Amino acid sequence: MAPARKAEDKAAVDAAAWMFNVVTSVGIIIVNKALMATHGFSFATTLTGMHFATTTLMTIILKMLGFVQPSHLPLPELLKFVVFANFSIVGMNISLMWNSVGFYQIAKLSMIPVSCLLEVILDKIRYSRDTKLSIGVVLLGVGVCTVTDVSVNARGFIAAFIAVWSTSMQQYYVHYLQRKYSLSSFNLLAHTAPAQAASLLLLGPFLDFWLTNARVDKYDYKTASSIFIFLSCTIAVGTNLSQFICIGRFTAVSFQVLGHMKTILVLIMGFFFFGKENLNLQVVFGMFIAIVGMIWYGNASSKPGGKERRGHSLPTNKTET
Image (cartoon, rainbow, N blue to C red):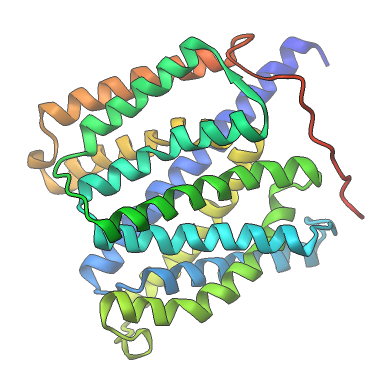
């Protein structure tokens, strides 16, 4: 196949992967907002455990049908990943509860420079000047859109710090494990989803009771709320898979930078659902800056020298079949 045709095919698959992630991520945000705000199901950690249980069921069915081939992931690597991933989920939930919305958004934005630092230290990645500047523009734009009131307290800062670093490490590990052990996105999900489901379903009810002072087993499961829980779990399968696909094809940094398009879409959809008071001149200006930064990042990072590894290669272990 000609190099030009290969490049076109890769670009088409990359675009499809991003679209898959954007659609499922925005969809699950809308469903979860309705589930929690309208139906009062505030058990976020337990719900995430349900998401991974549904994802586990999906990987089992695909294995039975022969779409997921046998593979190997060492237990120490699996345990490290699950620790990072669960600290990320729990840390984000606690950070949202203990911090102002503004500081919570700043913490989320700080994942990009933290992910950059991890790639520089662990993967010997070097970023060009234009790539660094474009990341800064994205951070500025999303910050203008989302950061309003900012107040900081000690316990909220600690929760945000843990959430940011664990999330960055989890996303770095998705890319790292897929490369080192030659795992597909389905393979990696098949290894990690059962462990995350079991740990979060065990921990979730206790954590949710601590955060909300309500018990998940005492919730009034009506038909409407049960349908939304089912929808949330179904969409989460696509969200989990698309995240692994995107990070595997790109990197955690690219996933974070371009992933802020989801933030922009959620803000725009909020305008259509909740009216003009949610979309003012500051938000529109921030959206424009962020989109310019994303386009610049995509162009700058794809150029020779825009983002490259400095004489460092990762040993790989072929998937066991």
